[in-house]
Length: 190
Length: 56
Image 1 (cartoon, chains in turn blue, yellow):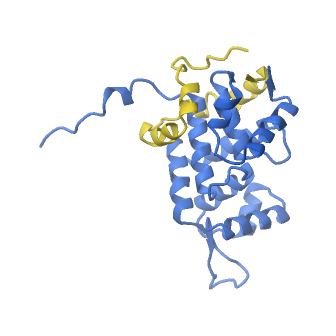
Image 2 (cartoon, helix red, strand yellow):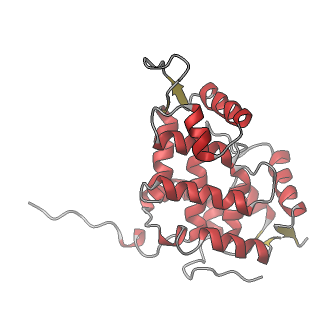
Image 3 (tube, chains in turn brown, blue):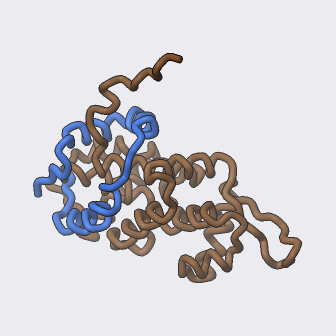
């Protein structure tokens, strides 16, 4: 039996920074949410909760996450419409619709979880941390990516930040930057 | 030039720092496609071998 080939040296030379880890998690979550970086961090939190509790009902997830009913209904509808979750019939309760994360959403979420050793609680704490950090009514994954990109160095050219985002409408990307500037979380030195 | 406000950094550090992201083990196999797809991100993070190279 031959010994396994070790990975090339350059892949283990240094650990990725915290900011790079955060950015990778955010990117995987965008992928899990049908490629929509405008998704709220709360939506990602709900997806992670459903994945961790397969077969959960909307009411159970709502209670676990302490999310208002109207918001939960809206987010679960979005997840269903975008093919991130499926709802099954319950033999025990006709009103209950067990929820499951499946398909590409499941795969991308698993990739995000792999960054935190598969620990859903840590992924949820990561998202809750960003929700606390970003002083906006509806913080998005795009906001989290901007701050992740800036976390290690403290500053970056505007064009480099935009290039690290999601090839969306430049207006949307610049608006996200402007809102974070307005909230006093980042500043523009130009 | 966009700069992270020191207060934001401090709060992020509290939430993303020791006990959170800092304790993660991280498989570069997962990171590589992400970083390759976003060269600007990689450039931004190219000098962060020393953690928290933040300068206000």
